[in-house]
Image (cartoon, rainbow over all chains, first blue to last red; front, side, top):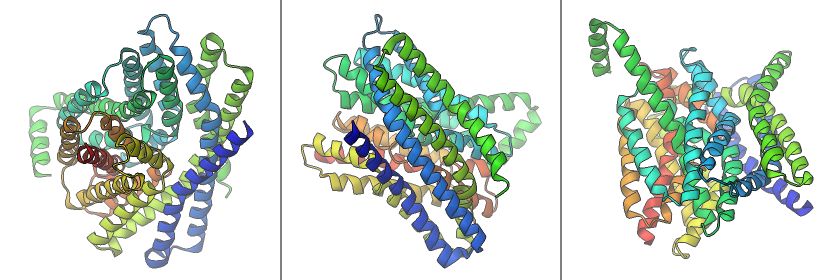
Length: 257
Length: 234
């Protein structure tokens, strides 16, 4: 147990260093050669970065010692469910709350709020991401139970996404792509991954590695799909609301852009 | 630093709202279904507290340090640098943050095993990092040239999907997983604010549709890279 915790401490510290090191080096190179910011700005940036690095260390440590072992136990317990379809419901609930607690999801939502001057509120982005993850984690756990090949979900999923790109408001396309990256953050990658591994291991002859990995791939797809779906609805709604003249003007503007 | 107290209050409230549903569900599962030994449950409670304190620090640090860092660099790049410099910076940022990421190492080991050692761990690591670097640079160049994101994404995902049918089946989950191991919590705000800074300085760019997408687009690179490695190995 103690050596386990020391191990976790070391790997966590290494991970944080790996994340922060390149950023600080890049910033300092820029500061020396191009930026030449006043000293107070540099100090503020470095203090903030140090705080974020310390925070990331504590967060990853907490996830590693608290959520990783528990995720595995939950996965093993879910394998004893009387009816396998119940896994879909448990998966959906756990997927929703995990995405809801992912720090980078909130950072992305806040940045969208700022960049759109409040036109796209952070809650809308967060809830859309969480609903997408709920659906796909539910499907992902069912996939483990019923041994469905991953490509059966990934290929139709990404094909639908490609079609929706062309129906979608272009702001939402860019946000959706970034959301795919941020949703597979440390919480999903440890807690839900451990849960999937526990479930696959306890369900018998599944290759746990193959099935656990598949879940993370689905979590990356989930918010892309739910956000481009929302973006397509937003575009349809704004289109039908406007008069014909307006629609022509927009078409013209989009054509020339 | 007098502004730290209201910032702290705001972030603590936000983090509690974010974490409590997850913690609540896990506690409910513990009571109703899992019945884990109390030592493991205590470890969970301690871990949750650490995660909450950590997330508060992350949010504060991001707001006062990391976001301004990205914004300054993004705004300054097009003013003083050439297109080459911007693309080079995006490439090195993508490459450096990936090569150092522990998750990528774990993935590289799996590819090594899946290919029976035909593809060494080290080569996987560099190919994935190269994939991120190239796609990050492409995404940055797109903002400058004004190429449509939809077109670029359709081509990139279309390529990945097509390759999925030719790659050995054990490589497919690894490939799509590779796309998700590369975006860290701290890389996120830097890359987003850098792209936002860049799109703010360039004339005629939309803050939202040009400022976002850079981060996620970088993660398609490793999917394609791993699928190609699978085809070569198989």
